[in-house]
Structure formats: C-alpha cells, structure tokens
Image 1 (cartoon, one colour):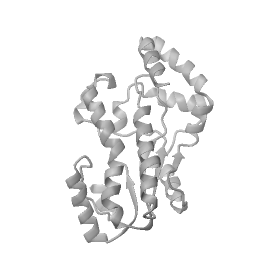
Image 2 (tube, helix red, strand yellow):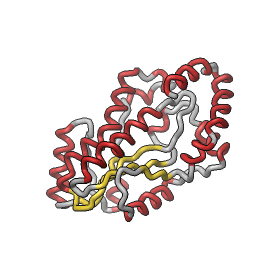
Image 3 (cartoon, one colour):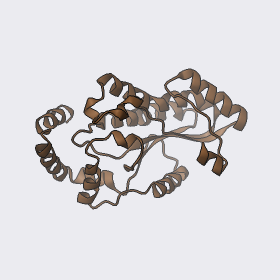
Length: 231
C-alpha cells in the first residue's frame, strides 16, 4: 500500500479463493471505474505456514493441492465475474512462470494446468464476447514465494549453463506491456530472455546436471521416480 500511495494507485484486498470477495471487488471496480480494458491476474497462494518449513518436501500434500487449485483456477473465477465489465476487445492475462522442473521443485503440473485453463478454456469461451485471454510466462526472479524453493541456486546455474541472462523485473514488465497491442488470444507469451526455448533445446544437458545434483544430495532415486511418472 505504501508504493500504491506513492504512485497514486488504488488498492483493495481480495481473496481470490472466496467468490464473494471477487464479487465485492467487481462491484467496487464497476462503481469506481465503470469499464476495464485489461485485467492482469497474478494471484497465487501457498499456506503461510509452508514458509516456516525447511524444505518444500515437508509441506503437506493437502497444502500443495490447495495451492495448485487456487493458483490455477483463480483467473477463471475472476474472468467470469469481471467479463461484463471488460470493454469490447478487452483482455485478461494470467501470470505463469518459465521455470523448468528441477530436483526438489516439481511444479510443472501446476504450470501446465494454469496454462491449459487459460489457453484452452477461457480463450475459447470468451471469444464470443470479444474478450481475449492469454498467459504471460515470466522468467524466475526473487520473491517471497521463491523462498520456499529448495536448491534455489540451481536457477542461477540453469541460466549460466544455457547462456541465458537472468531476467530483470523491470525489463519483463516492459516486454509484457508491448504484448498489449497484439490481437492474439489463447496464446502464451514467453518473457524470459529465451529461457523456455533454451530449455527445450538442451534438456539432455540439464538432465545430466540434475543427475549430478541428485547424486550429491541423495535425492537421485526419488527424483528419477518422479520424472518417470511425469514424462
């Protein structure tokens, strides 16, 4: 709120896991601004107690499932509530992350679920109302949420190994704004300095790196069991 005040922005609180709060926010926005041209839905969730734990592995599975559901489906719930406030040719974007699975941080399913909800479901359903829905897939950056990631140093090593510059938040914001002039819907915009493409081209190299990490930490057997189920 301190930064919002400094820049003259309007701030209110909304728990996207509670439909009545989304409805209340919609009414507030409608009364104050009338119509909207653009919505950026970046809300994500993890039980606050998870940040007190030493590793992601210690987080109870029910907390992980709850976080997945809220994070992936919040954009759908917000879109359905706000669609009648969006201007013709308006747009709603969800925020994803361009971060490959690595030992101790197997979150690819959460990422894929969010992207599928937007690109396959929302984009199709909102097209008849002339509203576009896309995903902004950002490169990894330091945040409160990133504190729960084990082996965080691997993120830097992945960038260094692939020769990709670590993304700057300000530069990613500029690139995101540039996409607003694009008429695509159901599209994933990768704003990550090319990390997504490099990961796809060098998966074998990354797997070799992961094997070395898991061997040194004793996670090898568990990691390969998980990867065999996912891929």
